[in-house]
Image 1 (cartoon, rainbow, N blue to C red):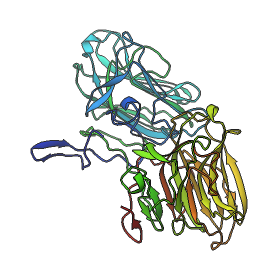
Image 2 (tube, one colour; image 1 turned 180 degrees about the horizontal axis):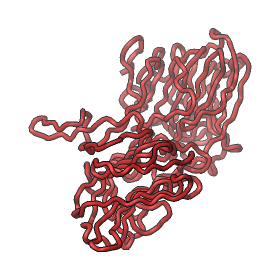
Image 3 (cartoon, rainbow, N blue to C red; image 1 turned 135 degrees about the vertical axis):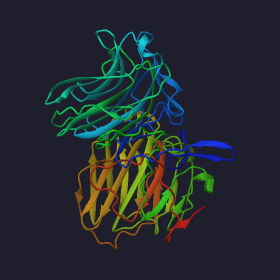
Image 4 (spheres, rainbow, N blue to C red; image 1 turned 180 degrees about the vertical axis):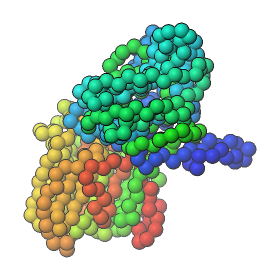
Length: 495
């Protein structure tokens, strides 16, 4: 991050000035500081609730450059290069980064040239809906008539009752390198309102239905039209809800990435970051055993947060990472969640991959829970026994090599089990079973609990967590920050 944890003030330590950050709103859906401390050359969003849209779908001719806080995203004029940066949700997946009924978008813009030298309009951002229309676009351009003052234009193809919205707001002339804060709020009952450097513009009383967005174009248009930002966009944030209703002071420090939720019911947590024993493959927290029973053919590799446990395909290594399950899992209720980063795209998989398997190694004992991916149907499959055998598959994205996919399963002996893929809740499988049955003794990470080597994960497992409660109900936001290791109660610290 570009800032140091704090309260949004400037502080001095040992003669050094520290730029502190302000905590992001709990309703934050998307946040990109473009500081170079994320993947994809620093162009990845720091936080995103949509399906893997923290990683840009398309980048061309963009780079990092000094912005309002540290670095920002620089897009040159289209007269120089066809520059684009798009964050995109593939068809059929959950699109949680923008809510069509209400929200707030705000960011800083630092122009390359003064307003007096504008030769074309400059698109600052554009959000597209699944039909290919502009949901919201902000751009700056000169007026058509003398004295050719600059204007901010707020436009939309759909939110004026399904019609078009095109509203200009006069700006003061600006200089090259000047930092300007823009914001827009929307509510499909009350309307749309723009803000310039915290000054509220006229509320546009328009109404619309529900629209689903699939693309966020930062500093450019969603349709490859000319007129990029010709400058630097920084601290780009989208929230769920109207944050501003009148004049306000723009944020003078960068937003911090929202912290991941922390459950008091955590039973087992493994970051695989190298800060524990057993080559960094031991659990960070465990109620039962935290040292691995076996680490054959497994090593650490780049994961979702820091490092993760890399389990190669079973045909290339007798890979096995196993832990004692006693007291690390509850049979009556709980949650298992983790990130999976495959080594190969779905099209290149030679077979399915076992992700996590929990159960008893007895040849006659059924598995309690096993999660694996099937290349035949492109699905996530849960196989196990909860009183009666359960095997259910759910739709799964056609994954690509290196893609970050969040997977979770919850269970309750009085109701059943439910799968989640990238925060999207799949159908509840109704089952009941005895809370005292199915004693487990092994947690197998990336392989089969029975010890078989075929169909291992063929990728990296990271942030493996088991809790003793149902943590997710309905669609959720996957944790886009590592879980903090609990250190209170009866939890046993491995460190």
